[in-house]
Amino acid sequence: MSEASLAAGIIETLAARHYTIAVAESLTGGLLVSELISTPGASVVVNGGVVAYNTELKHTLLGVDAQVLAAHGAVHPDVAVQMAVGVRDALAVAGESAYIGISTTGVAGPDPQDGQSVGTVYLGFAIGTEVRFLELNLEGSREDIRKASVSESLKELARLLS
Image (cartoon, rainbow, N blue to C red; front, side, top):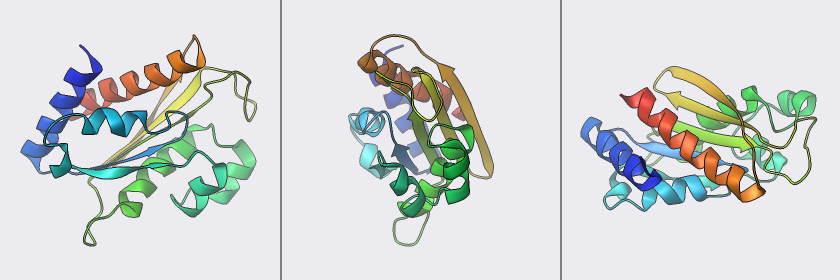
């Protein structure tokens, strides 16, 4: 299934359930929220997206624990989860937090980062009270890794919503 089809299905499901979503991205640099909002009607459910590419923004804007960042760096499952949780409040609308938060953090390359090899990616998902992460070990070019991260994010979100 194409990313556009996955995104359209996700938007349809969110609208039917009256759920909203907020997106926090690092390595994908806005590609994930772009894919979601390419679907007509997305404005009903997508609160917005934050590209927290700089590690400090993960703390100051999204509420990722500074000690976690200091101990592990930005590429870690706890960071992904905290980004997903934090973006729901960071992008609250009229005082109402998004029901779903999703995040991407990882190493697209060309060099390792924070002791993590190129292709190491963590996706964070906060849906209601459920919080989880998905670890990916991807291969390919920088662009391949970024695109695969978006694709896997959409696949996992669709699975979690099914």
